Image (tube, rainbow, N blue to C red; front, side):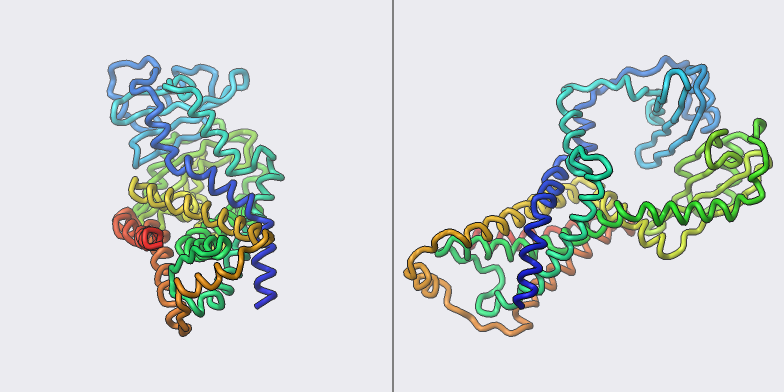
Length: 430
């Protein structure tokens, strides 16, 4: 046990400040969309458009309309957001740089990102600060890799904390908060909050670690696939005459009728995919989070390949939705916010309890009073672990379930609320 205690102590102390920074900076990011919507002026400046209902035009015709209003620009990609009912057009000019134009399909308005008006300039600056503090602390790639390492170290700290949980709970029941001694008080809170937030903290740390360090694996696999399927194209010239975006979409939809198109990358003369449209597709349920791009030959209009990721790439790919995409509804965001805040408090209580250890203790009268106020209760392993295991599994379900589809969001919210209700109960009882 003493070795596990040392592992938990030092791994926790090393990663505590970084983990606290990541959790605290994530609090406003959870409501990023809501904050942006609140801060945006209700009627942003839009490009001048004709009275033609642009939403009835095909995606390719919409792209042509954008290029007509931006002479000298080339189309890089089109992004289709089926949930928000918007189409985004990424365009670039050698002289004028990059622009992103969004078409709101609800209002048939083209909106230029740089023209969007906000109520308070300080809000986007604060959100940018929170994002950078969450990602790299303004240290660039070094800070990003450092945070990735701290995510991995925090997993060791959390798992080693579970190993230490049982010995400390042999003589007290779950959720007991003893108040007669300062360090015991904070350690009891640390243990309770640790159980309440364990699944959330472990999954977010693991997914953060994978999200940061899985890039080379993805890139290596993508490069090998690209060389394998495009070996016959290496000596071919850039296709000046090519099929339209609409034709590429039709071919893709025919090849994958059960998936919907979410993006189209246009072949670029200086790009790696010079001869092909890369069409991104999305499935339903779990499959919505697994990428299955289609490469369409820009000259012939034939499908060169439908890229099927191997199991290990699919596993790594799930890190992103676990970290970002499983709390899209407002109730889930509120629960994530509370859980994140409790994780911050859990980290603070652990740090505080460690520093209090080195302060002079009170007289033994406090310990005698503690014995009177909370009589020791000898607990079996089943009694020690029953509630913690239930809470851990329920929380795990609440985090993973929304990835199977939005129909799971309500029951997921109930599952995530249970640990928070129990924490509130023991807080009021203490």
